Amino acid sequence: LVTRTDYTVLPSVLLAGPAGAGKTALTVLLERGGGTSLQAPTKISVPETRTSTKHHTIELSFSNTGENTSNDDVNDELNLHHRDTTHTRFLLRDTPGALNRRFLALDYISSSTVSTTGESAKLKAVVFVVDAAALGDDTTTVSGTSAVTIAAEYLYDVLVALQRRMNSKNTSKAPSAVSVLVVANKQDLFTALPANVVRASLEAELTRIRVSKSKGMLESGKGADDLGSDEQDSWLGSYGTEKFTFHQMREFDVEVDVVDGNVLGNAAAGSGVTSWWEWMISRL
Ligand code: GTP
Ligand code: MG
Picture (tube, protein in one colour):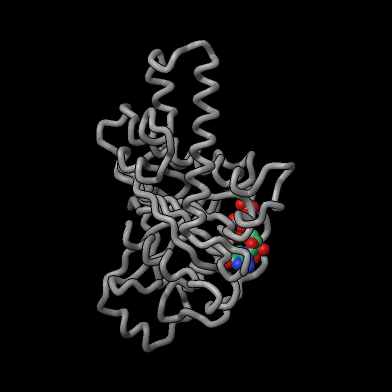
């Protein structure tokens, strides 16, 4: 049992990504202890989720053996086993992906230490969930906008917010590095794109968005050399490069990985959530 100590600053992981990607399903699964490799089930079942409108934070912990200890149902043998190990606690914040609710995740990134009712958190990582099956399907559109564009537009804002956070000079201490995990979810569906293809299509789409945003700046009457620091600040990645790659985020102390898996479905169909869980706890 975890006692709440309100004055402790816990490390936190932010879940973001477009609507319907599986953020809440992942939160529910981890809350039940599904992140542990010990329990990797053959059939994962998560109750039907519905579209989130608010953020929701859960507390998780893991032992130094990497096991998820949020599960209350762990058997006696496991409890005995855990008695001598140290537990690291952290917060996982699920946020809504709907266009008009994205500010909840973006605001969380801009504030370096977030303090809300009973909780104080230091952002360590962002897990950006995408529906890899929707990305692979050209017909998945919301009023004519493809799934990859919807995902990339949101990811663009998340990465720019992380860049700004690193560049912000109004804090005396340098903000701590934040890692990003792009999760290519729903690998149980046979139309899902694998992680390397998700990476390539997001990078291509982010490049396209960056080009169209910089055109907007140039069309406002300035030449490239006249762009001020404001424009440079809102340029994603290495300034002036032709093609955007996730590697460019290293300039801002932001490391980006793309890993596939699935929250639901037969574990044999995808790699489940184990590698995401391990990634998360290694970033705390
Ligand atoms: P918002 O709250 O609207 O931002 O969406 P969300 O990202 O929280 O999505 P949610 O977790 O509600 O999942 C959306 C739908 O995708 C639900 O019907 C889930 O059951 C389903 N889903 C989530 N993960 C998987 C998966 O790995 N495979 C499959 N097949 N379906 C999944
Ligand atoms: Mg949700």
